[in-house]
Image (cartoon, rainbow, N blue to C red):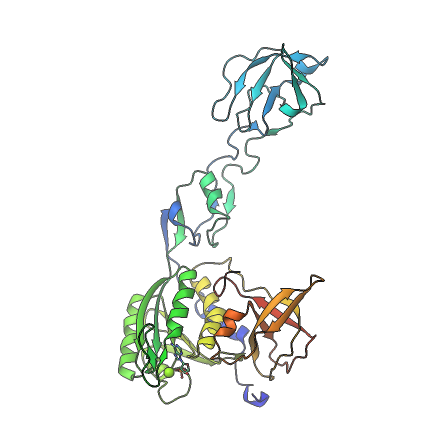
Length: 414
Ligand code: AMP
Ligand code: MG
């Protein structure tokens, strides 16, 4: 595309800024749920530890609890009793003796150190200690990991295996999380056929609704699927009104370009307050955003590659924002050397699909997946990253440095 035709397009950064500014005051509602059901949910409050971890001084080793004063003169100490995990030593601990202790067992009162059994000798009259002993050795102290009433996790993170066992270890049975975002979804187009039905002349399968559903599921949204809406202004108006009743966010695909059956923009102007943007990105130029009576609205382009890309680059951060997921990070951009030439016209930020790997020197290299048309969905399955080419850049020769973004699990599990 010629540069002079692209100067009126808005940049991805501008579009993102607008999206996030417009929705800045959107309220976030919360609920309290069982910890066992909270995987994938966003924390609505800080998680504060009600206890010390460890909750008591305990042994880090299988061995013997000793008092340093008893070790003078390298004696043999008889065993005065045992302390096991879950079964503390009870009773008197006579001077000049030691206590058998196992990992995790509470430290008997008066203990100066635990000596691991590998550093001892068992004799007929008791235990001989064969190594120098340091005060406090092998004792895990109360609150050493987490002290009571401290913040262990911030609000605004997504709960997963890295955090849930930690919360469980504190004995916390319920957590406050953000209510799932309700997202209503439909595709537009007279040509769309349901997956599993035979194609009639001129029909194609409805890829977008399926793709968007998958991504919404991964983002932990509650989905209201309104199916395919025909290219008919009344049907479209009805769909928007219906979707708005049931959702916090409405997403449609198709009908946002300038074709004869592209009614989305026209209807939206009637039933909502719409900003229609032509984005300086490729693929995915047309994108509509706005507000219906209750819900926010995103209109994605019809081409599946573009629909997925605009969802990934714009709707993903928007959903994170509306879901109180403040810890969400945009995909990291890394530098890589392209081993293949890349076709590019100046004017739009290009998200080509590529396959990145490390070469023998441990450096990051990338190659194109081939044809980059916005109808070539296989470029996603063949690739593992976007090659992000700056707006003003032209053709790229093999050997040049480019930026890449590895696909996150919304697109592909590595
Ligand atoms: P539109 O934006 O409605 O003009 O659509 C642009 C292109 O994307 C056309 O080739 C459509 O047939 C195609 N398309 C629109 N919606 C879908 C969909 N849900 N699944 C697959 N292709 C679609
Ligand atoms: Mg259409």
